[in-house]
Length: 142
Image (tube, rainbow, N blue to C red; front, top):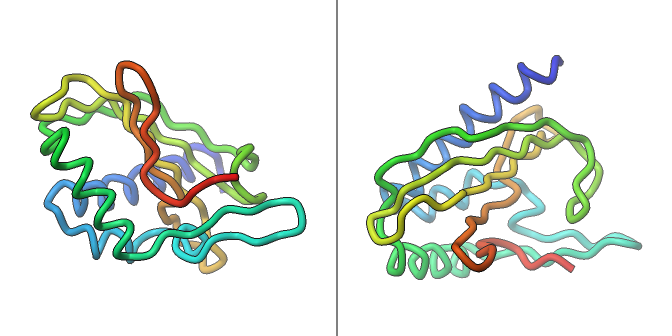
């Protein structure tokens, strides 16, 4: 598969997933995440805890309470890679959006998609940058 084709497929999946988040369907958005996002990874030299459906819903409600809804989202960048420092080996697309929320203007949202063994691209990570820091919403990385 060519890199640009992988990136385009991942962007479609990311935007479908973000649409679920935008309408507050947090349960369904969790269902469309990568398996290791949900269950975690426990390998010899790598550990990342998963996130339960309840934790995910709670995290997104907290974000929504502080920022409110996304009102505008523009694709900023997309990058295919096979290596990320905080993820196991695999195929990834890191997508950044310049997003305007109701309460805070112009935040950078990052959605990381992983190609799973069934050939589907699924969300493996989600975060956004505020003025002073990154806010990670998802499994804890160690």
